[in-house]
Image (cartoon, rainbow, N blue to C red; front, side, top):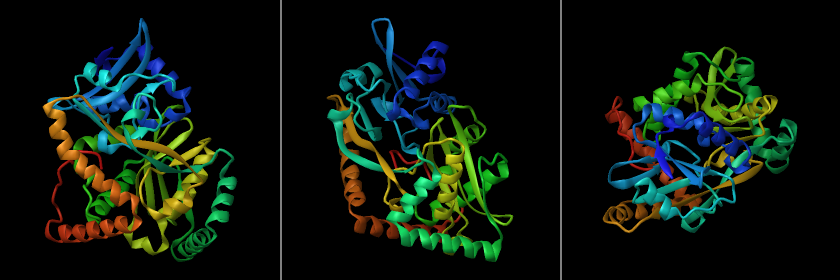
Length: 370
């Protein structure tokens, strides 16, 4: 096995990576694409990929980050919603041997492709990820939503008609390419992060540059998709995500708070699903999380896992003491809706106070997955 930077892979390895991903349904996620790995490598010096060989044949790739003291993280760590071993489903490696070859003492994961044999022994939890299943078309998807959540669906369509009457025709722009639309979205999202007590991703210059690179990318198998919902000529909601040839993954949704009474974010998701289906995509991955709207918009689920692999070392012991209690507490909150709502209210209260006292404060990057 060899460990290199993603940018050091040759054309044969890149072609094999693409073939492995496209032939394995569980790997159909843009965060597992070679294009994403190359983009992160251009911006982050600690991006690595383990190239696993069986004799003279490459059988797997593991993209990861190697930090100080042998701390390993998935590539993109807290910024991404999927990671895993790029290999055929039957490939099974010894995770600790893999860590040793990568020069790592510990490797935490929280959005691993569930069920990969290499990491199954180290999974501590498996979480459902709600998806909008479009394989039978948008009308079939909407029929499912109307059947299982008739009140919610009726309400959002009423709000859409009201928005159109009061502010102009509601329309969706698929893959908006102008920089101004992206600036509008990121401004909304930064405001939301501060308002709700979260870390502002866009305070990190490398993330802004990564988003710009992804926004400019559009190939048959990978691309960035910026969607904007308008009422008349006024943008009211938007989303930037990444796609493969089949799957659009949710990443940065946001809306203009002045239109909050119309629920433009949910409205946007329905229009986005319709456009995704019309462009040949089979599903929209909304990401794991406790947001209630995902519960009634979903028409299926996939799964990701959380866990930890470590080798005996002082670094691993210290890391365990610093991370495991926090991860367990977070799992308890996520698994209990009442605690999740309480935590959300507390964060929003903190956000209001912070915005009042330090409206222009620049926040630091978190040390782990969010």
